[in-house]
Length: 214
Image (cartoon, rainbow, N blue to C red):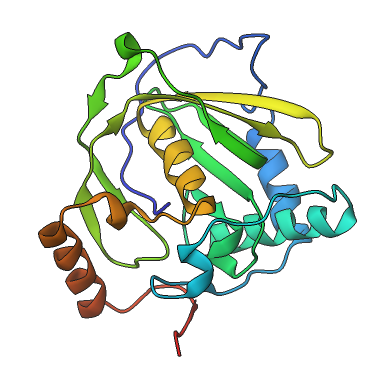
């Protein structure tokens, strides 16, 4: 997911025992991953790997750890707040994130085999904010998404994890999970809005390395 301006607000972060603590030492953890990793170019809309469901992660090994490190490095190069494995050409269900919530609290983590939890009707409050994507460089469009999200999956060791987010961070969790099932945010737009987003992309040079589609 592409970075957008976020305005911090005063607020205290409370960690619920049912959810992982992705806040403590967020900066140190992101830096450690990034320094071990190698930045890779970003795949863009039209690349086949972005338009199909990815394979489940079944091997929680050193190779997966190296992939996650590379994803953090690639995310930082592209100045993003979330990145799915297929956005660097890898057909696996894993995404990483380094994202502020609406209270300005930084969340950092990685999720394998994510599943977005269905929300009860009373929690489905829609937010029509702008959304962008590293795989559609330079384009933004308004997209309604719930302002609360829960994602369940596994960590890099295969242990079960649950992550929840509100506001901008909720949008990030939904956006990255979508990627791993073959959906870009522009696939949720009207035909006119999708055409406009692709036109924005065509008119702007990406500010980070991308993989050209053949």
